[in-house]
Length: 109
Length: 115
Image 1 (spheres, rainbow over the protein chains, first blue to last red):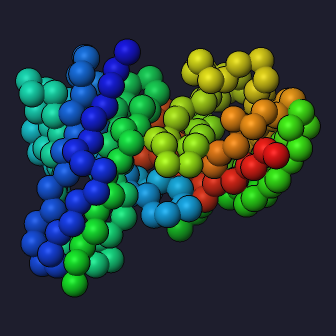
Image 2: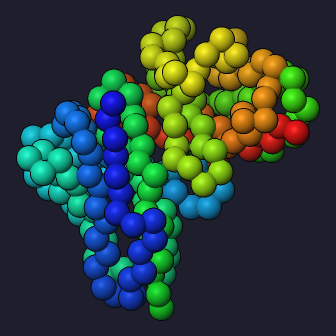
C-alpha cells in the first residue's frame, strides 16, 4: 500500500527565511498531490494542489514541486512569518485522499 | 466564505453506546467525506459519499459505521456500539467534484471521547 513520509516531525525556522518541507511516497505516483495546513484542534485547510504532469505550482508565498521520478514533493514558504507556524500535511490524491502524518513547523521570531 | 459545519464539537459517550455525528456540507457540493484523526496520528480516510451512496470506504469503515444523508443538507456518521479505540476527532468534508483534483473543504471536527 502507498506510504507517505514527511520529513521530521518538527522543523524550526527563523522568521524571514524560507521553510522547506519534504514529502516522499513509496509506490505509484498519484494523479494529484495536495498540501494542507492544520492548526491544533482544527480541521485541515487546503492550500495547493499539483498535478502529476506539473513540475511546480505557486500561490503567493507558497511553492510546491512534484518530482515523480524521485517520488517527492517539496513545499516551500518564503519570507516565513510566525503566523505560518502550524502542521503541514502532504496528501496523495487519486480516487481518495491519503494523508501523511504532517510536519510541525515553528517559525521563530 | 462558505464552510462545512459539524455538531457536536465534543461528545463523551460510554463504551457500547451509539453515537451520531452530524455535518452540514457546503450547499452546492456533491461529494461528502468522513475522516478521523486519533490524537497525535495522521488524518485517516473513512468513507466518501456521492449521489446518495457510498463511493469508497476504507478498512476502518466496517459494519460498526454507517453514513446517511437524511435530507438535502445533513450528512451523518453513525457509530454503533462504540469502543475505546473509536476516541478520535472526526472530520466531515465536502467538495464540488471528486476530491482528488479539486479543493476539499473540511469542517472543524467533532471530538469523540469513549469512556
